[in-house]
Length: 131
Image 1 (cartoon, helix red, strand yellow):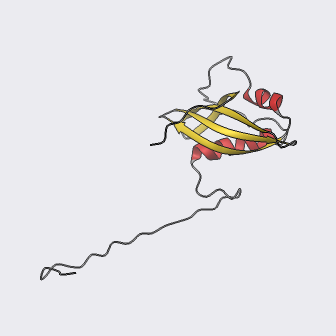
Image 2 (image 1 turned 135 degrees about the vertical axis):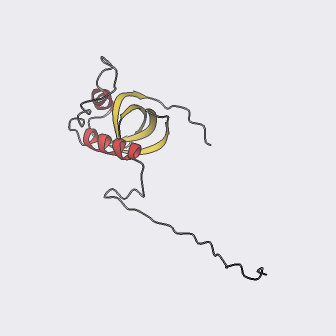
């Protein structure tokens, strides 16, 4: 590589950081962490984490944990895909119940500040276009 006289040589480098969480998820987003925490609690058969005091979930939207428990009392999960705008998100997840049958669900979330709250759950998937 030829350099012009008197110009310093700048070398670009790439620095990568890998963050491992307690669940083994590599560097998950705040949205995915909120969904994982929610589904871990509900999937173990327990109650859902309480919504934040300033939650933007619509009144009368129903109980997403009750919808999920009606599909399977206990389950494991993994996030399939997600889409988010400024304060709204939809997350496709797959639940695996004790008998091993996968159940596709969609979680609708709303953000208040830096907190995501699960507002609704339903079966199926939301079509999410890749970038």
